[in-house]
Length: 222
Length: 249
Image (cartoon, rainbow over all chains, first blue to last red; front, side, top):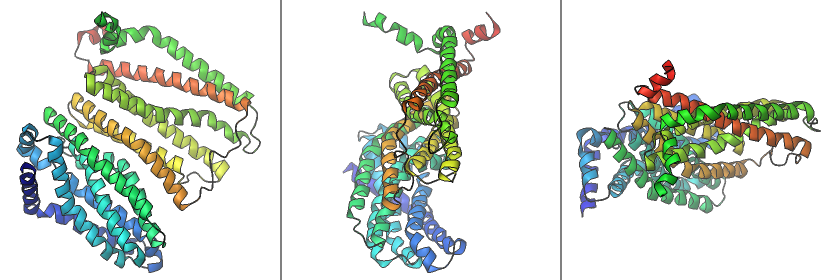
């Protein structure tokens, strides 16, 4: 009951600040469209690297909006109220993560085949692309939110946030991108998708604990 | 009873008594480190035979391998120190964590750099996206992240706690990163150069390497204590004991 109210509140907040969400999606499309300009418009060059490009830019787009994930709540004091409530902070955080992912990660994964088409990605790979980006963005949100929680009390945390979470993104980038590459080469990518799924489950179950500890720390330091 | 048994531990945990205690045995630690490093370096560089395949260029191993060893061990050292600081709120532990971060980053850089220098004559290139090299590079980024986060806060204590938490999140990730990078390499490009398939080492080379590793451990401990002493003075600079120490009673 409480959690559903929280989810509703978070959705409303994201809806009211549409720019945070739409910026991530616009960034995704614009950054991808730069590669034909910067690398080459030739399909034989873009096709083989399209998987990696989409994965990397999706990773950056998810990260773009993370800085604001807890910031407004921290600044107006509602984070303190949430931390004081009876519901465990980790659960509240989990709801926030899922809402963020619904607003950013899901649209990204739905957009990705379109961009794959524009980059002449082999058609066998689209299904795997959607699944791996859907799961992967969840991982990126959960792990990135740890960084967001650690830097929330800093005035200019955005740059630092990317520095501290990027190395932690390595595993999901490797497994996510190689699952799609496998599919593009006409091989069975199920095993790799399972690894992506495992990593996602691990991060979504552990990250809220680290995030709530970091948030409490940031509140103490205030 | 239990209290008195742990008294030395609690005393050591205060920067003041740490500073005083280490003043006495630090020279000995330094002496040990210098001796081991000199013996190991002489043994490795002058006495040990030339490698059949790589000639003299292999001798960089005597710096490269110990540095890489401690770069990895140093991360856990840093994370454990951070965890102790978070749990028991020990000031000295955070000081150890910050020192370990800086020294670890430096050693990671040394191992990457010496690896590149070694790579040129043996592999014909300074850089390969080999699994081991790549995971070292990511380790370097992790260290940089911890250092940057620790320094970003105005209040020292806030930086300590945040960096400790990040270091702990990193410990969960390091095995995953290591494995993932390992897989990534074997999935896509069958390794053209394998570090492990180098001719297994002869004792005449292996023993000096062990001496160098021991020397690096001693050196690490020495630099860590030295760095911690400097940080103790800095973070307690308002206290009387620092004034007494620095201004000479």
